[in-house]
Amino acid sequence: MTPVDISSLALEKVSELMGSGTVGAWAACASLWARVYVLATPGWARWPDVHADVNVALSVALGRCVGVNPDASAERQIARLGEFDIEDDGSAEWEYVVEIVTMLLGALHGDDVESCVRTSIQSYLEGTFSILANEMAKSDGRPISHADAEVRIADDKTWLRTLEFVRSL
Image (cartoon, rainbow, N blue to C red; front, top):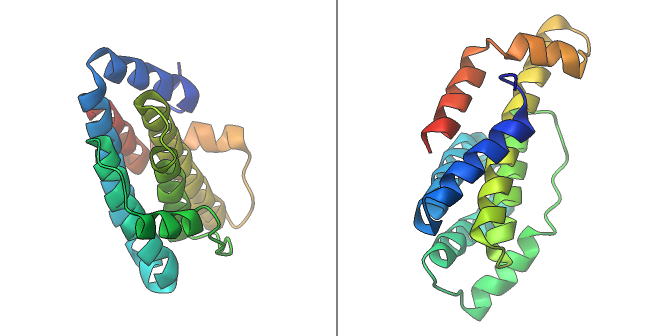
C-alpha cells in the first residue's frame, strides 16, 4: 500500500474503527464532518443558501449519530441539500463543500455507521488529493497526470497531515 492508496487506507481505517464499536465510528464521522465544515469556511460566504442547508444537515447528522430523528422542517431542508447546485470553480472551498455534503447524505438517509464512516474517510482523502493535485497543476501551469500527482503528493506536508488525522481517528 502506497501513501496515496486511498481505497486501501480507507478500508483499513474503517475496519479498525468498526472493530472498536459504533460509538467510536460515529465519533470518527463527527470529527471528519467538523474538520471539513471548517475547511469549507471561505465557501460559506460565497454560497450562503448551501451553508444554511449544511448547518441544519450537520446538526441532524450529529443527532442521528446518537439516535435522535429530525423534525419535518429539517427533513425539507435536508432534501434540498441533495439537490444543491454550485458551479465547480476549481477552488478548495468548492471541493470542501462537496465533501461535506457527500459525507452527510449517508447519515441523513439512515445509512449504517460502517457505510457513513467509509464514505466520510474516502471523501476526505479523495477531496484532499484533488485539492493538492489542482494546486500542483496550477503551480506548474499545466495539467498533471494522476500518477504524477500521486508521486508528488506522497511527500506533501498537507497530505501527510491529512493521513495523520485519518489515522488518529
